[in-house]
Image 1 (cartoon, rainbow, N blue to C red):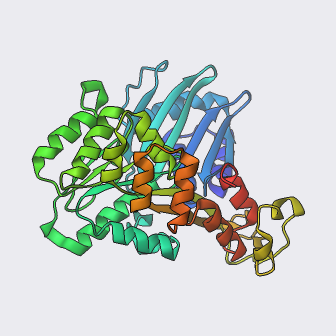
Image 2: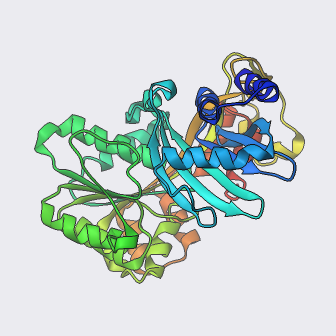
Length: 404
């Protein structure tokens, strides 16, 4: 538990307390930990305050239940939400003042049987640099991605679970294009929501409640003479059809889609009733993403994984492995991990792969063809991270269990 919250709790026990200071301190603690999300949830006997640090929820405080309504009210005021409404979900944005050092908050309030649960997505502008070279991608992946970004038309997709780095990679790709081409390039985005303002980019936030959907926005953007279009997510067949068509008509389209693997994105789009010949002609590549926790550089030491975990490592690689694991220190808050690393797979569409897509072959067969054409899988790149000592084998298994 943080010093700030300990102090706050002692103050609350001694005298009346200002909830504004409490909320600010909770946000400051989460930001100091490098958290992506702050969870404030009424449990049976207390308010549990947890922060998602490096992808894992960590308890930072427990507060008295009678503060829940006041805390909820404060977040509603900050995000310009309806303060008197307590039985319906609400979402809003807020920008912290000088005391929060400009941290941006995306506030989600959801009713539960014990009261309102609050989840705050944190965006620290001081910790955001959209540079592809600093994201930590494998050399082969970075080289391949830069090559695809040289193309002037086609569809480039990113896939992975929530919080796997898709948005950061897309923003970094747009910044790379801007740095390369300067003011000679026209870039437009359609997002839900706009998470960061990018210079020299026309960014649009959809509003489904008013009928301003991804599909409606994309149709209008096509009349804006864009050269590069970023679509936050392909969710439905109409959006998919417009994005594919845009990629075929001289636009570089960058977007995300939810699928288990890179090859699975083609099956997902076919299930959205997109013709295989359209996909084969328009899609340049699909990049699968995951994030794993990085070993703390201050306390990482050699170790021997358990026999059950070593089963996932090919025997030919065990002899050269340099497994390391953090023992815990002040820098990593005794977790053994500090920061995160991407694990990726980049499927570049080649002629043999296009022919397979036209034949509607199964996802597993598509993946085999991609591997034959040089794609390194999530498993291969993930195990390489563990073998080189950048993260633990246990972490790779935790994140990539479904792929191993």
